Length: 215
Image 1: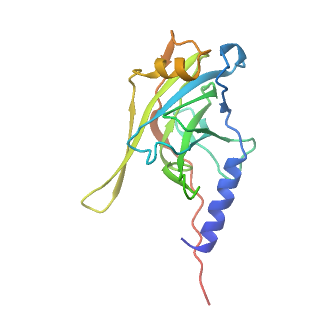
Image 2: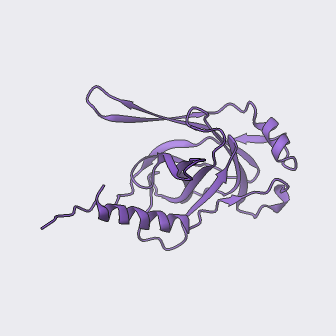
Image 3: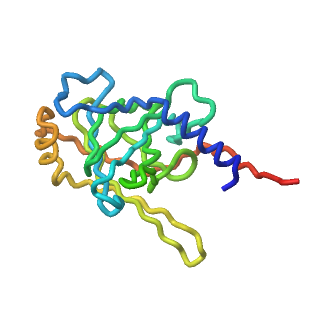
């Protein structure tokens, strides 16, 4: 990676980390009464196949995505007119947080999952989708408690040498209610709605890479 490309990446991550996509941390004692009119409670499970260390902390970053009339999702990275991204952290297999409701013109996409190395304190991403390509979008349209599914991610190298990225969302609710009762006892478990992440395509154009020419 070139020096200038490293600078560009750092600037982008700095912008992202300081922005908001309507994703908020939820306290273990909070309830549905604390939700705003345009919020819901979301639950996302991370596959144990992707978490390298069960004692590590995981960051999950979401970003706003516009939705055009034909269903295309897009976001301009360097022309944001409002805060666009939020990150939540968890040290468990589930992440529980407040999420802004999706509308016909705006939704929230999962753009990055990173795991902290307990020894070096460095963050290693196993899922990144800031611009272009497949993207996992939410579809939470009503208040309540929504399960986004269990996300797993894998890479396969094709005979041609091309790397194929595979996403899978397990929609089983097994274990969700047990987790909430243990860690979030004030959140009712009798009406958990299944609102799985959707694998769709993001048409946002990534900024071009910089080539450094030494003279």
